[in-house]
Image (tube, rainbow, N blue to C red):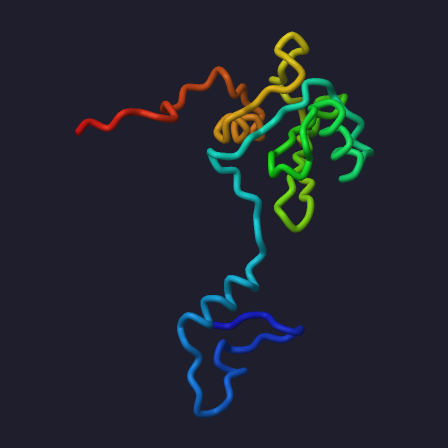
Length: 155
């Protein structure tokens, strides 16, 4: 196995001094630390959706201010905050992971997002993880059939 390090490719044992073996666990840890991270959307996350479209020229600080003022929530809480632009062609997701903010954007190459809550549904609309995934794929999260979140297992 080879990995990229410092502009050249090296084998996994090239940096181990002669006479020493790299333990399996230390190699696994190094691979994990060198692997790019991704944001996972898990069922226990709180996902808040801003009903009103926002100005997408705003960056992380502007979006965090919207979380405080419009959604009445702390941007450092670890929630996912989802925003839509005025043309309904893009969404932004803001999240804090304990070390810093993530700001993700999806822009549709053609068309517009078909579903978004209206003002009558409240200031913010909490979503489940599967509903956000459906929204990201430009679907209607409330008119899809999915398995129930909790179901009793027969004994």
